[in-house]
Length: 207
Image (cartoon, rainbow, N blue to C red; front, side):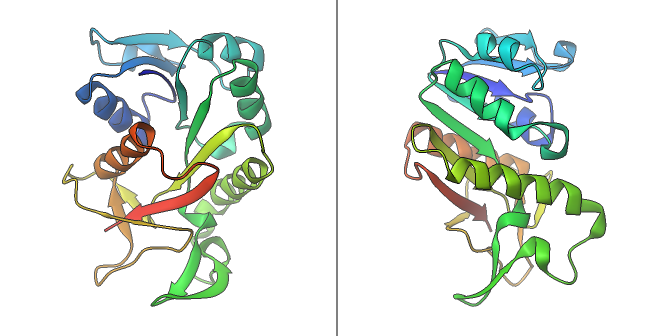
């Protein structure tokens, strides 16, 4: 497929780019600093600003899907959604945040999102709140085919194992806590891209 990847040089974005290349997809890697995009025969690096709706829409036109992997606090979800729609791209996948996931004890939801937990780090609240706003906007979309994939609470560099669990909107946890590597997150996202199972849905991935 022909994929436009917004934020191709970030922690998650760079791993998603590697996973797309690994699976032989053609990628337009959109970033502010294109010199940081790894050279590849099936990757085109394009300079783009997520705040410039018209220019972004032009870059997205002609692709089979758009993947958005940029910090929520430094972007405008309304502009991103509008750019995807203006470009007439049929599918939009968003790298979400864990703050929008519901906390559960076992399989019982507590009716409380992670961002509202008493021990949620204050330093991450602005970004997490912006992610929740993004998800709320997507939920109102009836024509755009969107998917919002939230990582687990700890989203860190690690290994590509290909072994993980998928969940709904409940935070996944095990004996070691709640975590997923950037590498395995990328596997789960590209799996969803290739075999859509969460159209118009929010879901999560973790160990």
